[in-house]
Image 1 (cartoon, rainbow, N blue to C red):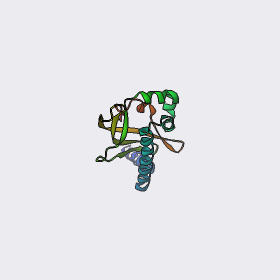
Image 2 (image 1 turned 30 degrees about the horizontal axis):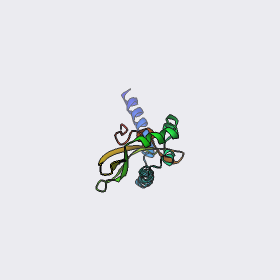
Image 3 (image 1 turned 90 degrees about the horizontal axis):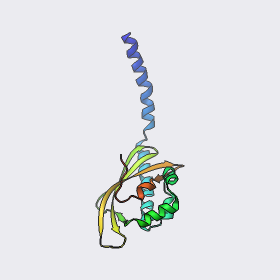
Image 4 (image 1 turned 45 degrees about the vertical axis):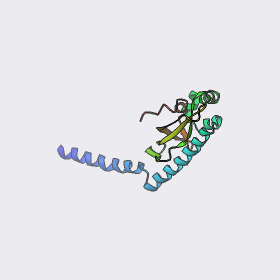
Amino acid sequence: MLWLLVLFCWLNYSTVLPEVQARQPSPAELEAIQKETKVVFLDFLQLWQEERYFELYNYGNQHSREQISIEEFATRMVELDWVPLGLHPEKRSEVSYHYRTFLYVIATIVFRHKSDFDLQFSRRQSFLLLKESGKWHFDLLQMIRSPFYSPPK
């Protein structure tokens, strides 16, 4: 009986392990994912800096676009007191990979007050990105709460 249990465990282990390994991307794939998401993130950040909220809405994932209309999103973003100036020059951004279609970009962003240009601060934030229809998309609900909200990990 013990022999059968050991045989069953070995068979289960030998059939599951290759599947788990097959799901992990190669180092080249990981590097390509990181480069792609950094480009998307910088484009997204540029639109946010320029306060082009209708274009920014197109970067939203499906779930958040179902939760908030484009008009409401733009209105809420206009009402925010802070806009990003850009990435902190001394702190590198990171891509925290979780799955091929699910990751976080972690970046330190310098924010400036919209009416008092001398008022600035830096904040390290993580941005959830989901790949939908072949493109990376952000959580718009996180954006209307920025810079004081980051998604839980």
